[in-house]
Image (cartoon, rainbow, N blue to C red; front, side, top):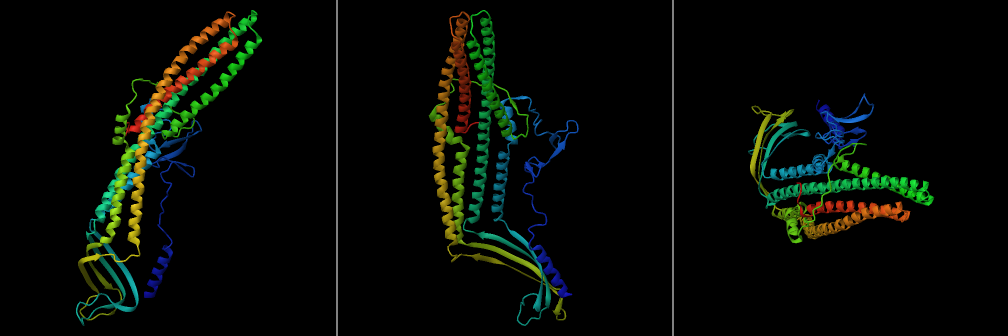
Length: 493
């Protein structure tokens, strides 16, 4: 019977030794897509085929479509910049990933804090011996005892650290600093997302105006072509004038196709940045490009504001502090540990080979005391750990210095971009005004037979370029203002 038990336990151990877990974790569970599955970040979305349209449509278990209806904003509804930002902040996958990193940092802090608390464990086991063993050590010389070759054991143990050289407190502080740093990184990621969303949003608004300019130019040329054809009928125009006009119309048409394609790509990019999966259904931004010539910031106050509010700069400072605490943890390893320990348990002889009269097959035992551990020689491991943390600290110090330079450059660059955009708007606005007047004059001269067709076409081309440059300058101004907010650390948290 004993041999059968041993053989059975051996088989169980051998069978399970290669298994990491009975039910392995699926690392793709909760991701956006894997093996044809369509999932949201909470893995509750099912791929459902609509019987009415015969087209695949992704819906969540709550019935809310990730594409066509999100927070009551339909993708065919014109959205303001605030609408787009609101959806992006709640649905962007990168922000969700950083939020999970904050949870990781909180767990690390909980682990570090737990080291200051008592640790209680329960131990148990079954051992089979070739030779009979005494189930517990004798407490007196010559005291009889119970022997057996099959012994069952059960113990409860407790350990409480009394002194660690500051290691645990430094670990807790380092973990808290890491959590704070990650929170600042999340705040910065949100601001960067707001800037990137704003940049694309303003680009869409400007691109729409550019497309409208090309459509206007196309209609203007088509109307002029009708006038040319009318003049040809009365022998005041030439075939060459018609051909030149038609060539210019064709050129505007192909450029219009390019600009419309660019607009659609920008709309798709904006939809993707919002974290929405909407094939063929991009969002439709609504708004106007606003210009305020008096809104140029002052560099000194902007620089001061940046160092006080930049989340990435604060994250770098806190990371530096956390690495200092980790260096303290490494140095504390030389101090050793002092702990309070205690055990209480019992032993059972499942198969007693020697049991004196009056003795039970069960005996209990226990102990309590203080133990310490002081490293004397570890082959250089502690010193190596100290050097590693010192190098990490030095690296962080240099990166913080680089961050300071980056903050200064970001602020100065944003202000310079604002100033340049203001000058561009003033210049291109004059070009548009003069271009409208010039085109009007050249058309009248051509109609009276005093001007050449090439002058009309050149005036029309100059007006189109002026309008395009004007809207691009408005876009550059709006983007530069958003860039300045990002540079000084203001905006949505």
